[in-house]
Image (cartoon, rainbow over all chains, first blue to last red):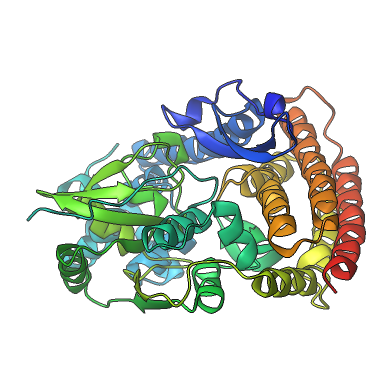
Length: 131
Length: 330
């Protein structure tokens, strides 16, 4: 890549940060060039962000319709999936899926709720509230 | 408590671990560029690991696993690193404070998701992000994050979460620092053996690693249908290449920079020519990313086969490249 080819289109996902990229300067030497980011990076990052946003919105709709527990919503909002939440909380995946049932969720012991709250980095009260 | 390693210099880097290693070594007197740290530790690679899932997709790595670069510093510099992990978060934070109070610069493995200074859209559950801590001011840690252009600050509660995040590649509070260092210059032999090792990794026999891994991934991509899920998969491949760990073009440009320095140290002029060639291979990776992004945006018809062919072409040119590299340092 040439110094002049370093993408500077801007990438909204970078915020105010800049990426360091290596490129060839006029004398043929590879140097670090700060980049404002490229449209390619933005596309793929936003794709991932939107995918998670869509999952969160689905979960929210289900919770509001009474088909799922707030736990599912907060899991998605924290950009986790069942597999990751299971690894973080140490609770088996099938148990987590069971806890997505609103009736079961309402009966969970404070200890189990605290484990979920800890794993998701949320206050316990917030975990119980609907989105 | 306030403490500060006053002589520490923050330098912006393309990749977190090579940047952390280079800045740490430079702080201890071994003046080292990021590219040299990356090349000297033979960190360039390719791996397609379907068993490890990142947000539901297989791990596709363009470099060796975490800690590889740091460990790669040991032999060439006769450096003695100390790595410590902790079961209890409190103990991990106490130890960090203790080391900072001694004036040490301490490296940490963290999860990007819990670092508040990262832009919101970049915060994913990725657990192998390296940064250096060079001081503490009240409750804030002074952080030299290699991939940000300026030094950062982070409150202790947030840093604790980031250090003790769980899941794939969980850091377990890992911290590291340099105990002593035997030499501060880079020898030609160290450079040559590092290049040989990279060639071995890239042309090795395991089907998931090196150029064979690229072909394996190409076969997977060729099998994709044109669903939304497939588009997400392709986006994921590009994200692993351009965004996660960055470096651009799957680290090919960093390695090209290393080969230029290597040509000077070893006196093998062919390495400078090869650097040029790797630069072109890196451009090939960027074209692949661009093509994929256009398909994701719907500006081009989504044809997984086309992308697979591009991956195969990359595998071909890298095979040829590493064969020549092998003879150049033989």
